[in-house]
Length: 288
Ligand SMILES: NC(=O)c1ccc[n+]([C@@H]2O[C@H](COP(=O)([O-])OP(=O)(O)OC[C@H]3O[C@@H](n4cnc5c(N)ncnc54)[C@H](OP(=O)(O)O)[C@@H]3O)[C@@H](O)[C@H]2O)c1
Image (cartoon, rainbow, N blue to C red):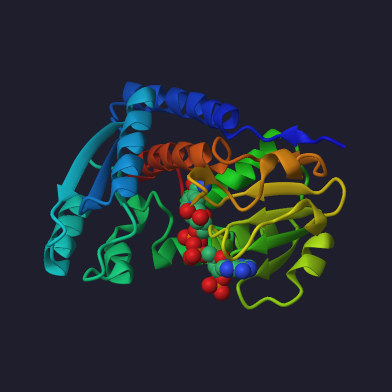
């Protein structure tokens, strides 16, 4: 069989259209949604990611405030900057681009962001709410994956979902989102034994390893008609790829997402959605 491509660009566009409408409505009520970004150092990938996020904000009418900092920026300075952004009424969302240089403490930095402005959904407060099915601001990549299922009416109720990742950014938030959709979730990682056998039991495989020297999801590992979401982004043989070769996996899957053009655009779209949600929460127009 040849499956259906889950096109992240098309689905992201539908999310952005909804966000743009919400932004226009907020503006009518005197609220100008604004995202502050914090980028430390000159990591080329991070610089590109932040630039793309600004461009996407502009497309839907969200204002941005850019904080580009020297790689020598100290933890004390970071804490002061976050405090000032937390207290700035014109700012509704705060995004600290990861990874941070080694001398900065990721946990201390993220934890300092006001949960109501935490558009990446990574503060301990919002992570806790997610586990209790109460979060309004959820990590962007995981919620983007759920949006992909919804767009294609892929029902997760009772399905076996194998998740190959257990990071705070992807695997753990996705685990909670999938459980909330009544999926039976099996979370795998580098120490998992018999990964191939486990994948073969799955109705849905979501993979996010990001290192082809360690792992590739090949068609032999999935059952006929499985859904495959490839979250990974990595360089392999000079090309940007995920954990699987889309052209091969789509021959066996019922649905599959490519890299590039799959989960990546969804992540940015969900950031825009979270910024609008944060602006609504702050102005009391929505409830946590
Ligand atoms: N599309 C997007 O918008 C987007 C957004 C964020 C990240 N990403 C991409 O997603 C990938 C993962 O990101 P991350 O931040 O979660 O990275 P990470 O923290 O390095 O997580 C990688 C995960 O893969 C597991 N793993 C490593 N080798 C494995 C193997 N041989 N078999 C099975 N599992 C294995 C690791 O297990 P352990 O926990 O045991 O180490 C870990 O859970 C990267 O390629 C990143 O670029 C994409």
